[in-house]
Image (tube, rainbow over all chains, first blue to last red; front, top):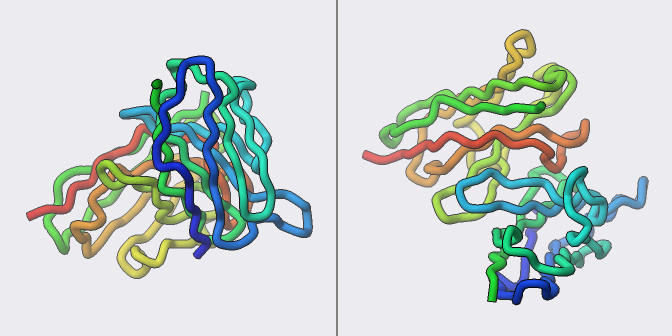
Amino acid sequence: DIVMTQSPDSLAVSLGERATINCKSSQSVLYSSDNENYLAWYQQKPGQPPKLLIYWASTRESGVPDRFSGSGSGTDFTLTISSLQAEDVAVYYCQQYYSTPPTFGQGTRVEIK
Amino acid sequence: EVQLVESGGGLVQPGGSLRLSCAASGFTFRSYWMSWVRQAPGKGLEWVANINQDGNDKYYVDSVKGRFTISRDNAKNSLYLQMNSLRAEDTAVYYCARDHWYRFSSDFDYWGQGTLVTVSS
């Protein structure tokens, strides 16, 4: 199974500042046949199901604010919130879907400083 | 509007069984792979199983193989998870999720609100 490791486990960022979450996979999730990274990001607020933010490592899901962006390739990926808003307080997860079973990172909790 | 509504959770003793259901609406259910994803209390997300459009292709996480069975009824727009030989470590909120892509492994673009399964004596 591909192991997904996120860092940090938690971070506190001031309103309007940048938040950066890292995700590392134990093997590459870049598919050579289509040159796509099979990597997604989710946001989960307390008491709610996860919400898909980013897929193919950098494609924003419809309706997701453009302050959320994804980058990276191969085994190293980043989710950036360019200007943190109060409503962004949540736990964020990365997930690979290169192979089965699809696996998630342990989550990163984002709070307001 | 896509809706996924889970039901069937509850308290069950170790070794017992439970059947979860997920009622889907707002999209062409028979066209999509579907998954179950679980989340233990205060913990992260774990994919459990998925099933292809006609129900003939199924995958499971190793920890539930031989104990859980995923199935679907396209005529009823419903997804199921039969859980047998339940263990304390199966305690979690179980989410029904729609697979984003038509392949054996995918991300998930829609999720239900979840149903809580508690395995305890």
